[in-house]
Amino acid sequence: MKKYIISIMVLTLFVSAGFVRAEEEIVATTVVGQGEGGETGEIKVIGEGEQIPTTVRTMNRQKRANVANKKRSYIKENMKDKREIKKEEFKNRIKARKEEMKNRKESFKAELEHKREVKKEELNNKREELKGKLKRIKNKKKEGSVLRISDQIEKINIKATDRLSNFTEKIDSILGKIMEQTDLMESRGLEVAGIRTAISVASSSIDEAKTAIATQAGVVYTIEVADEATLRSTVKIVRDNFHSDIKALHEQVKKSYESIRDAIKVLSGVREASDTNGDTPATDTRSTEAN
Image (cartoon, rainbow, N blue to C red):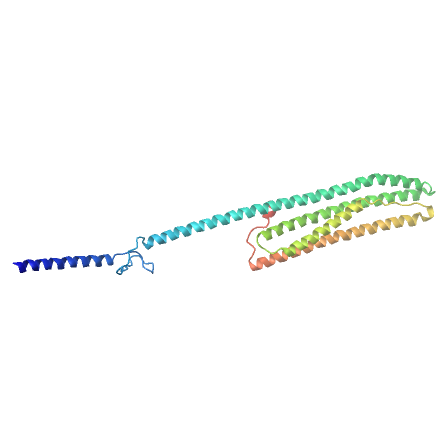
């Protein structure tokens, strides 16, 4: 009887040990998530002493995706903000540039009018003085001829300075557009140092031409009458001096025109190089004029 009871107890202990062992094996083969290859459902056997992870890899991947999406959204918004700031800065620069060109135009116009206004009184005085001197000339035909030549010189001078000032204003306006295009190209990251140099040369040349025009507009050509014998040669000297002054003025304005043409060539060269290299974004450059 005792032997039977002992056998049952031994058998019970053996079965209990088997259950415990089987439970440990079941735990050791628990599915813990994805494997190294990223395939769902891979089974990893946890060795003795290792802990089973509490976070599955599918959840980690989703978190990483969310972080990446947030990062992309932040970068996109940041780039958008920078573009808006850059666009606003460019608009302000163009606005300031137009204001500068407007002031240049008004300043030149005011200087030209001032020179002519100052000249007007002196011209009237000189004409009256010339009439008084011509009374000594017995030949009344020559007297009338000298007065007509004096008046013609003044009329031609006004006409020439007006025409050259208008032409100078046009090339100055072209210079303003070159400046706008240069600002636009610089905002796109292009190298514009060469264009800036050409612009500086052109701007100085135009300023010199404007100064020369204003000076010429204020010149009073006086015919000094000594006697009837020297009257013809005296008139010729004054007329030749006038023609020489107008010719020199033409050359000065021509120089400013050539400087603008050089600036356009430099700008075109930079633009063509950028188009060839694909550096310039496909944006309509006419937008600068619209703004």
